[in-house]
Amino acid sequence: MVALSRNRLIFPEKVQLALAPMAGITDKPFRQLCRSFGADWAVGEMITDNPSLQHTRKTLNRRNRDGEEGVIVAQIVGSNPQQLADAARYNVDCGVQVIDINMGCPVKKVCNVLSGSALLQNEALVADILSSVTHAVDVPVTLKTRLGWDSSKKNILLIAKMAEEAGIAALAIHGRTREQMYSGKAQYDLIAEVRQQISLPVWANGDIDSPEKAGDVLKQTGSHGLMIGRAAQGQPWLFADIRHYLDTGVIPPSRNFQAASEMVLAHIAAIHDFYGEQVGVRMARKHIIWYLSRLPEGVHLRKSLMEIATPHHQLDELHRFLESASEYHTYWPRAY
Image (cartoon, rainbow, N blue to C red; front, side, top):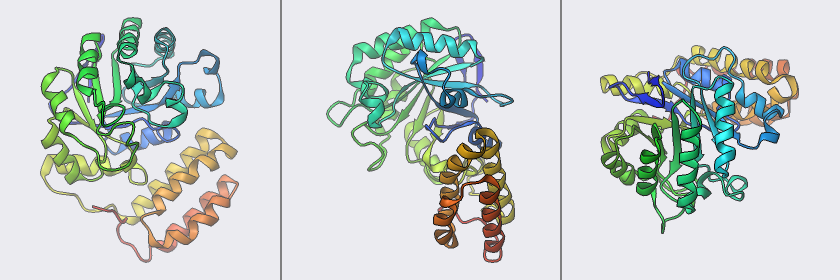
């Protein structure tokens, strides 16, 4: 587990496995679940730096870490250096132990306000933000970013050096440009160059969807850790399988179907408890789709489950389906 000291992260010798921040996904129930399967690091959903939105229901849910174990990391997003510094201080006052700056989100509504990966077009502003936030708080500050804005401006080497000079404690790099969004294949050569040229701990991110891919990316980049996002959707045990593979060189057996079913049901129930009845049912739907996507029988159930409006009904239908599916499956299917 990463250790904390004032403005520093101390990485142990073993490779660190991190859950990447994903808006609407890496809430407290999902972070806790991934930690239970061996994620060493779990970053919460991005929180806006806009002070007028600090007390909305969405922001309060994203900042809810009551009873959560492990290092508490809050990701902040914005484009105003002073406002981001204020947001960092506010979150630290609320108990956050590490601040993460978002310069990687590629979605239009974030980039259209010159936040997320749009910042990579303005290197002077990047420098101001990094300096302002690191000087604002007495906790480590990390940076999540991409290779650059587009194929003509892959400026990650410059951004990484700026981060090092500003006192950033660690760097997570998604191996795509903003222009690529999530299309094509992640590239790791520039991540390897960053690793060679700076002294900061580096997480490699993008398309790490199996234990073998994790091993390949580590070999290519020499990174201190791996950050896993979309591949953990519907299979949070990926962290445990990767750890087993890195430690032994062998992919472990698939999860027992009954045990996996119980975990799925517990996760959906935790979402209901966390968000409340109406919001909980809606938030659970995407997770149910991801879980059932690996079960051929689930294709016919997904549509009807999306129409259910109450937690008890949603859980009951899911439970009945999994009980029926257990007659055909000894192990939970996986793609690796």
